[in-house]
Length: 295
Ligand SMILES: Nc1ncnc2c1ncn2[C@@H]1O[C@H](COP(=O)(O)OP(=O)(O)OP(=O)(O)O)[C@@H](O)[C@H]1O
Ligand SMILES: [Mg+2]
Image 1 (cartoon, helix red, strand yellow):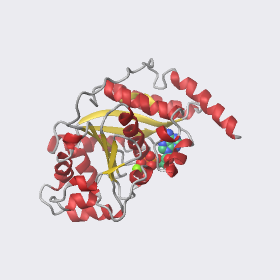
Image 2 (cartoon, protein in one colour):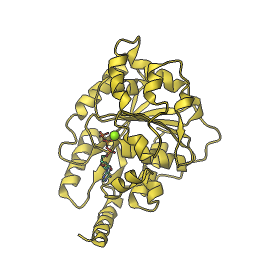
Image 3 (tube, helix red, strand yellow):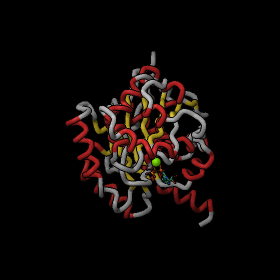
Image 4 (cartoon, protein in one colour):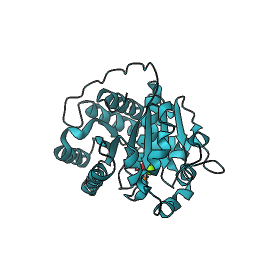
């Protein structure tokens, strides 16, 4: 397919999406009100132990669109692959990372915070060092609560903290869930999407019972939706059948623009502000604010 054909096909697909891909009437979520002050932050983990479902892409672009709406956002790279840090174009070597903060309770988290090219969006980076964290933390007292302790020190400076989890349900992810007020589960619209979600929900329930009674499921976000395929539509239908109103009305379409934006080290909202995906992430930000998940 030529580029123009491809773009046109995408546009046609998105037109159908406007009709409400989740089978519910599409509401236009209102423009968020301006905040008078900032903080304390609501902490949200983007979590799914399945790889490649759009956790990092959603953290970057939700972070960027919330910042556009005047929210102060801190994104935590909680994956040793460091994809969030790379996608936001920040340094990961010879700098303080989230790993250093986890290991030394005395380090000031401010040392690790880096500004991004998006005004109002900051990040604490990670690199491959973080892969050793689970081994180091396993013998610590209250080992599940270490990240919560780190984030407490910076929470007052931000309206929202987004944690980009790695694809596993190990100790790092349990730390993220223990530190969080809410969880957002990105689900790729493909056949095996629902596999493993039961285990994830079970893990969230255990964290709620044992470590963090207040944790809420903020929503399930369908990603990589392709309305041109019956397959995508069927998967989305099954997801809505299984999770009802927990499924966010905003659906992120599949597009080749994301890999391009990642390479450039900027959110898609800066790389291609008028692209349909930028609009979808803005809608996601408005929906989460309208639902009360974010101030
Ligand atoms: N809506 C989309 N359409 C097309 N490609 C996408 C979309 N969202 C993300 N991608 C691409 O899919 C790949 C996986 O996305 P991403 O890294 O966000 O997933 P992840 O869940 O964070 O993966 P991991 O589990 O490895 O951390 C990336 O190459 C990304 O550019
Ligand atoms: Mg990722």
